[in-house]
Structure formats: structure tokens, C-alpha cells
Image (tube, rainbow over all chains, first blue to last red; front, side, top):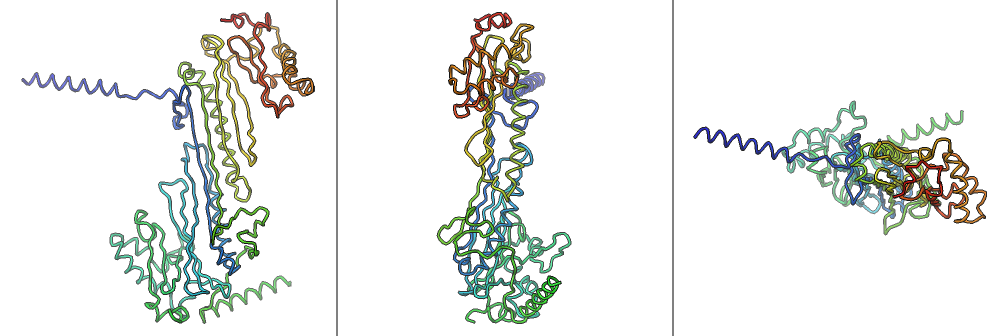
Length: 255
Length: 265
């Protein structure tokens, strides 16, 4: 009995080995033995290679705001031109396609406008980019213009003298973010740090992106800042009335 | 000196401006290096109206730039599969052209201040096989390249004739018996055929294009019964007429040719 089982086992093992040999893929006759990564395929009676890579840059900005305020127009164009230049400078393929992927390399700069008042308007630039990594990415840039005075607001400029805007906003932002991103407390703490160490990342500002709506200050956090990439970008909307003790009265609703 | 005064005064003005801004929360002026846009909608003044690529779309000013770079190559599969030496030779040529193309892409596409990014980029290598006999085959590659703003392609040819039994390539000289110069033999024949085809009006260009030097006879194949020469139009002064193909029956080359190439099936 044991012998029978032993023989059966041996035969099965043999069959597996034979089928494993059968399953060994025969090399594609079109493979380039010297450059195995180049993707040749058999097509009709030919060996064929098709490679394509595309680079696309799209940008837009609000014409009406630029027409109303040449200053705002020049600030937005200046920013777009910098981004554009950077994109095309980085659009390097650095060799042949098997080493850099097929793209499409993309930078899409779209925008949204928010009116706090007829003369105070925020423009949010939303950048969607893919430059050959594991996935695309998103980042933001915001400007808040005073259209009458042809100037730009800073975050500090919204607050009363002596108020540390970032120290004020950090705890509020953390509370809101923890409601939806409870699994990522470390991400939130680091990404909302009022005064992060800029030794490693010069110029790092966790509160660089914000807009003023009619009645709220909205903070924008790109992916990775307060949560992992999969969680996407995050926003925190703070009603201006909640900041009434620290905000410059000019920005309080109804002022 | 005036410049220093101006800078000092400007700095003072900025500092005072900043302090005043903090005091009363007035907007902080930001200086940009982009000139103020003109009244013309959607023109980037840094570029000017002439080269402007911005477009007005509703309430947007939009800019769309795109480069699509494509490579398409083929070579005869059966020949490559059965004769690895031929495959290696064809792939060496293809890989070199392909590598040069991507290097050019790398050099030019990434120059944002120029218009190179708006160019058309493509490389297309097509192949055709000619069988002279069971053991002699020619492959004719046509390489079409677009690397510019114009839609005109640059075309180049590359040919190989393989001795499949001997695992080697055959040079033009190898077709002829010892002591016969292939170029001086072919020049009068090619010149006469070209005159027949495109007329005496191009005589000077034809003479120059068929001077008996290797460059003029670089592209050729052997079919069953003839030696076929390819002359790019620009080489013989008829760019507008395209490539000129001259077919010389092997029998016409008679005793100049090695006997094995005269054994017409």
C-alpha cells in the first residue's frame, strides 16, 4: 500500500516537473538579446517596436481679475511662467524610453477664485502633475489680492498686530483634521507645525496655501502634508467669526 | 552713486511699508519681475503679441503646450529569427539611430525658452526585404525623422545584403570580380538611367550625384534579377521629385559581376 502511494507521489512529481518544463516560456523571437528591456513585439511578419512619450503643459488664469488688476495679472503670470519653465526643464527623458517610462508627463494648472469682497479676491492654483513617478501628484499655490490697491495679502496681514497667525491656526486645524484623519496623528502634527524646522527644507511653510471666502479662512494641504497620499488633499475651513478676537477687523464679515 | 542712493531709499521705503502694513494690516506690496500686462487680453507681455500662445477662453486665459514623441521601428522577423548574425547587424543599426533620436529629444525638448518643445518629434524606421536567392537577402531600411517645427521629414536609407550561408554581410565591391571598380562600373549606367528618368535638365546634378565614390552608392539591394540603386532626391538635385530608384539588370553587368551573382534562378 505504502509502495503504491510512493509510486503515485513520484509519478505526480514527475508530471509536475514535465509540465513545468512545458510551461517554460520560449523566448520571443523579436527580443533583443543585448537590450532585453526594449519591448519588441511580433507584428505581422515583422519585429516591431512602438514607443511614445508625451509632455503636456496646460495652464489657465482668470482673465477678468487680470484685466481688473494688472498687478494681479503679472503676479499670476509670473508664477505660471516659473512653473512652466520648471516643467519643461525637468521634462528630460534622460535616455531611452525603457529607462524613463512612457508618461504622459503632465502639468495641469487650473484655478479657482474666491471673493471675500468685491476688492479682495483669492486665487487658488491647483496643480496636477505627473513626472514619471509611481503616481501623479497635486500641489497648490494661493494668492489673495487687494484689487483696489494693486497688492497682495500675506497671512500675517489678516491678523492683528502681535498675533502669531500660525500659532493661532495650528490647534484649530489639528482639531478639524483629526475628525477625518484620526489614523494619522503624526502626519497631522508634523503637517500643521506652526514653525517647522527649515534646516532640511528651507522655506517650508505649513500655512502657505489659504484663501479667504466671504466668511471663512480656508487652509489647503496637499497630499502628504497632513495625511498619506491615498487620503488626497485636505482643507480646513475656519469661520472668520471664530477668529474675531485675533483677526484684523477689516476682514470680519459685515465690516 | 545715484544707484546706491536709489537702492537705499527703496529699501527704506520697503521696510517702512512693511511696518506700516503690520500696523494697520494693509496689503503688502509685492514686486514681481513680470511687466504689467498690456490691454490686449491674454498676451504675456514677457513674450509679446507676436509670439503669444495664450488664448482667451471665456473668462480664462489658457495656454496649452504638448509634445508627443513617437518611435516606430520594424525589421523582418523571420530573417532575424533564422539568422542571429543578421538580427544583430540590423539591431545595431536600429539601436544607434534610436539612441541618437532620444538624445536629441533630451537636448531640445527641455529648453523652455525656445520653441523646441512645440516641435514634432518622430522616428519611423521601415524595412523591406529582397531575396536574391536562397542564401542572399537584402534589407532596405527607410528612416524618416521629424525633429522640427516644419512638417518636412528627413529621410535616410540604410541597406544590408546578407550572405546567409556564410553569416556575413556583402559589400558592393564583393559583387564584382577582382580588378573591377564597382563605382566606375556603375556610374555611367546609373547616370544614363537617371537621365532617362528625369531628363537632361538635371544633367549637372546627376553627374555630381553619380560621381564614382562610395557615398553615392551607399544604398543598394539585390533582387532576383537586378542590382537596385537608391539615390535620395537631394543628392542628385531633384529633392522635389523624391528618391530615384535605378534598376540595373544583373545581366547588363555581365563579366564584371562574380559568377555566383549571375546565376539567376
